Length: 296
Ligand code: SF4
Image (cartoon, rainbow, N blue to C red; front, side, top):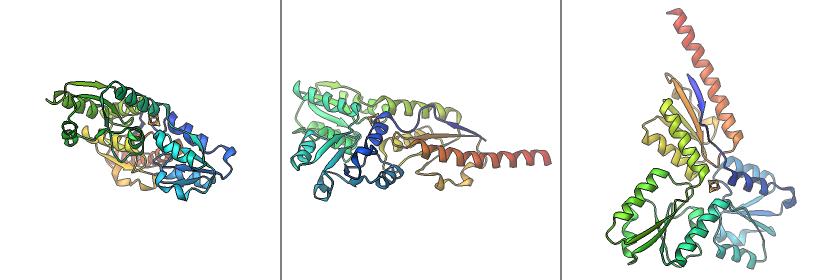
């Protein structure tokens, strides 16, 4: 059994920069992160160990006991940032520049009279941040949401995308929007970020060779789930795990080539532990196979 790591996997620069900022000694137990910095349990646990407090979002403003707060890599609406400063808090902004590019793009579209549309998950922190300063908008998750565009009564739409969406799905959805009879003009900027694209391309390449994929990342991580989806679309057996403790030996029996990938919020140390544990299983299964070949 061969084991390969995807050529691009794990934490992106946006998440790494945010974690590094939160860990800076300057905060000295005086920092609360507003929302999940990354969708990863292990990272959140190590932040807590370092004296960083966490609240789920601006709705938990009254739970913030520190003077300093941090906006996560997912970004936040200007209205949210203002609410925090109005409450007398010092705001540190770890918004990823690629998320901020989406905010800027959609605001520019609104100025040019396009009705704003975001392709993504309405309940995701990034999408909440993107639409948080807009007076009207539509969020489209899949085809079932397309009638919402008709209901706006508008004909010119400006479309951006949550940075972690799946490229093919988004392109197919935009084509469907363009075909709608109520749509006169579409201004589409594909804002899926490069690290997300790189991970999706790498997983596609690996599914050409592997007969089993292990996808590592938080169960609530949007881009990790997209990687699982890519494997499913390619009909490759896959398992989504958060840590090496969930690996099961029987998954690997009679497999020829195992691929490992991980979402943009999965830290290197988690991937390394998974890789190491799979190598142990691979060595054991390969030795077993060799012995059986000798004795037969
Ligand atoms: S996934 Fe993309 S947009 Fe999100 S933090 Fe990482 S680099 Fe930035």
